[in-house]
Length: 262
Ligand code: ADP
Image 1 (cartoon, rainbow, N blue to C red):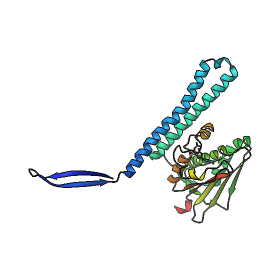
Image 2 (cartoon, rainbow, N blue to C red):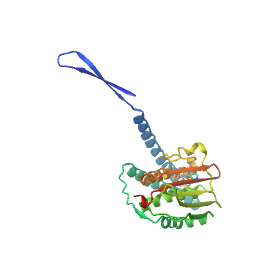
Image 3 (cartoon, rainbow, N blue to C red):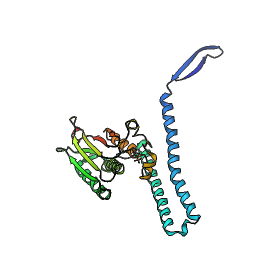
Image 4 (cartoon, rainbow, N blue to C red):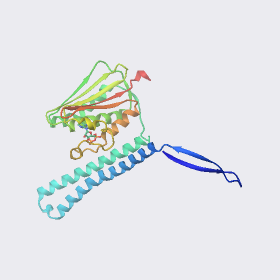
């Protein structure tokens, strides 16, 4: 709590009173801290790949360039790290547009199953390579949803790519869509992967929060995928939630409003 006193004086007279203004700064301080943490996180996340790139360049300068096999490997790592920086910057720009509400949403009635099938097609190859089964289940007939197709695809891409990323070879990923009793349409992305410990679940939608930073980075993650998905779902007046059993699997569900509601 911040208290500000302002003395009140009339012309020529002495002090005749005080005005005390009480201001609740806890919310302000929380926002300030979050902003500082965020800047520190961004700096750190950008510095890490740069340090790696630099050390590989130095190794090449110190002679690795003479050994073609080694040189090829080092260059590949450097390019992967540069790619990850690019993704990170794209994610940051998108979050900042969403924060500033400068992201335009082109919502329209959509047949959800078409979007879900397109998403499945985009990941089919990746799943085959990792021997992960990818299945779509649609329960009953779904009403059309009122959503921005590109943004919705991005939510699905983020969730399905996480499911594949954090599921070992031979596992399975399922996308399930159904209508809830309250009329909202629910989409769930479930996997049989590494899971998330209970104590981390509450913070998992925070920007840059990861259970295992090294693992996420080595798999090319930016730590922003779930935060972006949450912003987009909220902009559609939907909810997003995660449930997981450590070393068993994870399910992320989100809801979208049906067209009939509007
Ligand atoms: P990242 O780029 O690190 O994957 P996300 O914001 O998409 O960032 O996810 C944040 C963290 O949540 C991940 O680093 C991982 O620890 C955890 N996570 C997300 N999805 C899953 C999943 N399907 N299975 C296990 N862990 C997950």
